[in-house]
Length: 428
Image (cartoon, rainbow, N blue to C red; front, side, top):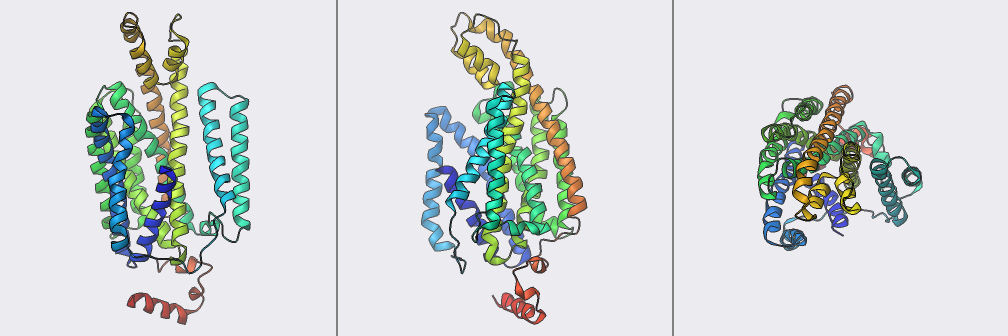
């Protein structure tokens, strides 16, 4: 329910921004502020969650959402202007179910493959997921009201930013999940201390997001994105060196650098997608942008998580001595968190000796996996930077510059009507 609500909320906010701010500079600043709220939430979440976990049951962390949503329900009807499309499309429930099943099947197949090797379960899930995705895209082209407006992807300034945004979220979201584990399970910080350690990265993300519109006033968006992607690659590169994961200063520095680079890229990609779409299709464009971000995050956690899990299990498969309870042994072989919990729950006579023998090996296996993930992220950012420099070097976030790209906008075909439309927008 939380996922459905959040996924519905985010495209709506972007669509409102697109229709509230017609001036390109104002819209870019609004999207930067919108992106900054993510970074503030990223900072506040671990800190508030850490406090709650210190005193209450873990389920209480979900109550943190309640006052925020209550405030939204109270003030949104007063402060936010309503914007409705002239024509409402029909929701194709079959497409929604098909997309959900396809993504879940692909992620399940990847994770089963990493955990247990390539078997019939993993193969069947991957084939089902890929086949479902193929049917989904075929269906979208035939529907009068597609769930995913594929015609928007014909524009370079929509398709390429979506691909790049997917790549950076793929790397960033997965790495932040592993970073939290490294801070607590390898270095030994408490949840609150881990949250405080993430503050420099969060502040860097805020600076990057709010600084992007300023840089876009001096340089072209593609140039800013290329520089930011290189900076992101440098941050990940720092974390790929041996020994970097066990050093708190290096972890914080690397995370701060790649956060400073990721947020301008995500902000400019979002701005470019929203600006390139016609006003009446802004919701569809925003939904595609958000879908790519969510999909990138889910696949990043699944794929990169599976890489880390595979490396960890390869080391730990023979590290657990015989005679241990099979359930505890499987937990130790599966993840570092499972190893810590399993060793904690063993009898006091056995646990200390086992912990001193197994935990260093488990932590070393986890850090090996994290360094490989860092290297993969570094390569992905370098390739993204090269692609951005080549394909989006002269791209613009100007809504007027993208009018001609819209095949359904008949004002682009008639200079007189285009002039009238421009005058009307100015008066608005």
